[in-house]
Amino acid sequence: MSRPIPILMYHQVDAPPPRGTPLRGLVVSPESFSRQMGLLRLLGYRGLSLRDLEPYLAGERQGKVVGITFDDGYRNNLTHALPALQRHGHTATCYAVSGQFGGRNIWDEGLVAQTPLMTQAEWQRWRDAGMDIGSHTRSHASLPDLDGPAAREEIEGSRRDLEQALGCEVRHFCYPYGRHTPEHAAMARAAGYRTATTTQRGRVQPGEDPYTLRRIMVACSTNLVLFAAKVLTGYEDRRR
Image (cartoon, rainbow, N blue to C red; front, side, top):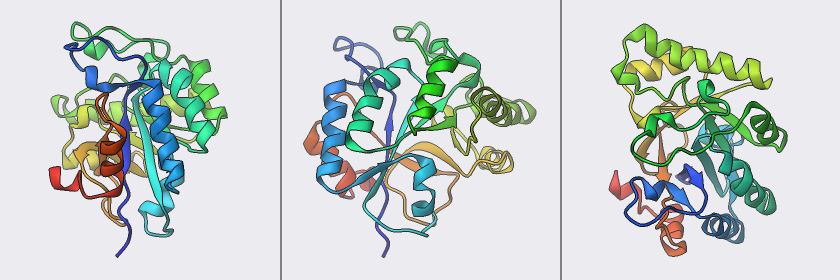
């Protein structure tokens, strides 16, 4: 049987806010992130972007690999996560909200502190460092709340925007909030994406539907022992 593939889900890599802050779990400290990336390398795993993971997901290649993804495109992914990725020889996919270059996480306004997102020039630095850029729609829209044409424009339009602005092929999509229906998966396929990731927990078996890929959330509180359990065992699979 093929080895299951964990796809890690991160958001921010920065100093976590005070305890009790809403969505604090989505902020992993730079020190924790670096230790996690180092552990992967120590255990003989290669952290890969979705672009580099494609042949493994399709069952065309096998190996000790882990997908690494970041949602939203925070500037701290560039300043704090990128150096650790490079130091340990990993690649990653960061999903961009194409209508918010140089903006902030306005979809969380009133809930958490507003945090800068990467500018166009910073996205180009991410790309030039060998990292992958995916799409997270134009506005971080909750797709099931939109009618069909509006959802399709969020999915297709974001890919067009990113490819024109950044001069690279955008092959991978992430559903904002993880919310989607089979119709949205069909739209992602029709738009030309090769994969689409969700927030459903668990590892991926090679050959599974590439438009409903499960992921493993890495939270502020995820210590190294738990991190290892999430990657190496069926811990997340049992919690779907």
